[in-house]
Amino acid sequence: MKKHVVIFEARGGSDKGPYGFRRDSKPIIDSLKKRGWTAEIIFYSDEDRGEIYRYTYDKADAYISRVNPGNLYDETGYFQMLKELVTHGIEGLPHPDAMTAYGAKNSVERLKGTSIVPKDVYTYYDFEGLKENFPKALAKNVRVLKQNRGSTGEGIWRVEVINRDKYSNTIPLDARLKLTEAKDNHTEEKTLQEFMEYCIQYLEGNNGLLLDMPFLERIKEGEIRILMLRNKVVNVVHKKPANTKDAFSATLFSGAKYRYDKPEKWPELVTLVEQMVPIIQQRLGNYDIPLIWTADFILDTDQKTKKDKYVLGEINASCVGFSTFLELSENIADEVLALLDAESAVNSRWGAFTR
Ligand SMILES: Nc1ncnc2c1ncn2[C@@H]1O[C@H](COP(=O)(O)OP(=O)(O)OP(=O)(O)O)[C@@H](O)[C@H]1O
Ligand SMILES: [Mg+2]
Image (cartoon, rainbow, N blue to C red; front, side):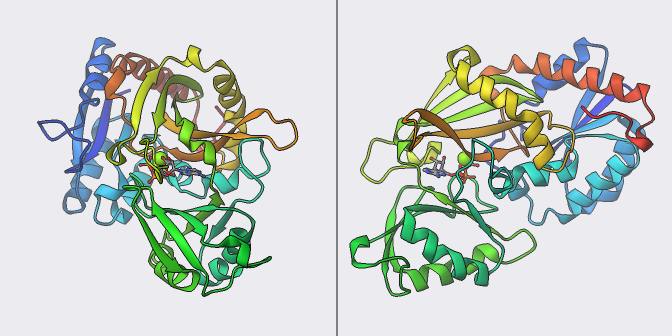
């Protein structure tokens, strides 16, 4: 083994410290050093792709990807490079396809039929799909429509029919909608037709899609972010939306308040998530579970039992931060070493074991 890990980052973006890299990357390097390994950060750019590929292939046993695809002008080249690296035996943390599967907004829909996802969740990949189903879904309840590439609430819309009582089973195209965007909780009005046409931008391109899920009123009580180190819950963040009339967003910019909890404070949810990990892994394509990832939950009330139930709102796996509890780097380093040790014992060409 080369005993070296490369951490990929992107230049720019609001997640960077004063020296241009992520504050929580240096602790990973330090923790690996304590264990007799070395690590370094490499800023990815398309121009240097060939050279970065060769360098990483020669020098490293594994990469850790800490790139928010939204910070790259076009992520195609980056993903291609990661694929080449994993094909040639470099351990991908995570595998590029796992990053896509876990990070895409339709991961929620892929878990339909499990206890953490409502029955009326849909994904639209084109305008026809949207036009066919969205008016019907909207007739049943208030919806949240999510673009795939969004982060920090951009293109995440709460959609409510104004004067719902005027209509029956389907909502006509000229019905007026009240739209609230999670970016800043601002509201606007459009007709259903206008709004669906506005949404075409979210359906364009390779990864264009919209996730349509019911609006969960209890978001007012907060969104609960579970931070995972592979299959273990390591931290919990409680995010309470601003206390204003239309606020439903748990993003910092929109004024939500964050509280950082130990997993012990959320025993039920922690048990639920850890039990769900194998199902999540299987439904999302059977890749190795990402090194660090998050799952966000919102409370709902079960109609039959009247009991609390947790609903999955989204998963993130591409660029998860842990600046508020940097000591996690020690566990990350342990996990990386354990993984590579296991990997080195088995010929990976035939994938002898699942983990
Ligand atoms: N089904 C829902 N019901 C109520 N509120 C929701 C629902 N889905 C999302 N929200 C609210 O909208 C916010 C933004 O949605 P989401 O987290 O899915 O998008 P995002 O833009 O990818 O955010 P992030 O930056 O966290 O990745 C959430 O933090 C939550 O407050
Ligand atoms: Mg979110």
